[in-house]
Image 1 (cartoon, helix red, strand yellow):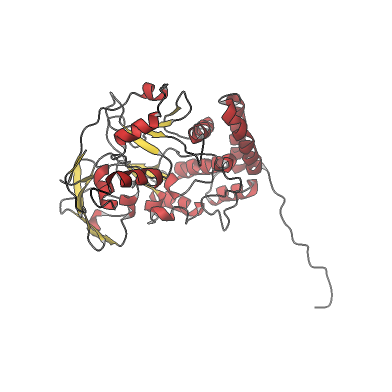
Image 2: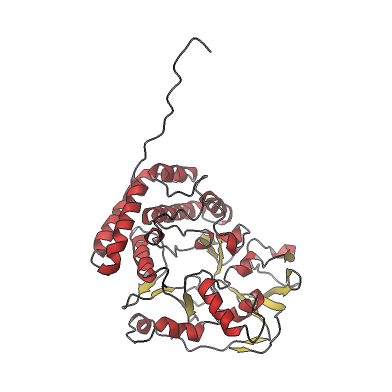
Length: 399
């Protein structure tokens, strides 16, 4: 990658797939205007007919894939001596490598084709040095993905589409996070929840997931997370409720009944596994066009209670963020018109218990600490709490 300026980038051409869509400009505010001949929207929340959108902060759909945390810090440290580092630069560096089908062009940044990696070699790495550090050095600047966890988007050799793999690792604050996510995603798959392809490296340091926003013929699918669909910034990912997520699905999905059920199963599983990070950015819609908008496969499922036993739900359920017991979980399902909630919960609990037994002994050192946390969450999510009944007022003929 070649950066040809030492000045702040003020304008980007935005594409939807291979089609020019409009211009994003940054002056005092962020302005996006569609080209006169644009036909495809950058977001289902930003119709082409409206033509012009001005925001004080970066528009949510463009902010969606900005790097955060570890990756943002590393990019900033690498470039800040050479030019101003801001949102427009991050988008320019991302180019066409971000999640979804939006891409960003500027003559100030020239992208180069990268050779790619072999999946089997990533999974079987036995070197003394950290493979993640090596991948990060190669692909840091072109990684267009949100989230604070250390992760990098990696091209896959011999793949029709580049880049196709997301490689994650843990850190000192969240040790063994790769194994944690792998186990939780295995439990999701056991419950019949749609997931991307995923793997754990032989040394159990890397969780690798194949991108699901790429079609079999190599075309990018549009993808918008619930923060975008609710018009919220990334910083507001925790400021909503699961009821609002359900409302967005009913509003945008072209198959709302099936997608409501898929969302409910993912929510139930998060309660069963103690996942306190199921926030707005971890639920998304994918589509080719507005006639085929569907809930994406489930992703980023982890047992956060393992690291913080006092953790809560990421979003509100009703007025509370406390992990719910079975009564609240069933009531939520009924508000979504989910049929046979009790039977669904029982079946999922059986599937989770069976898969936990299958995993017993797998990665024993790590699972030994994780298993009690999972079983505790599972017990809470499947146990009915007694209803609190106020004592009736004793009859008296006196007021």
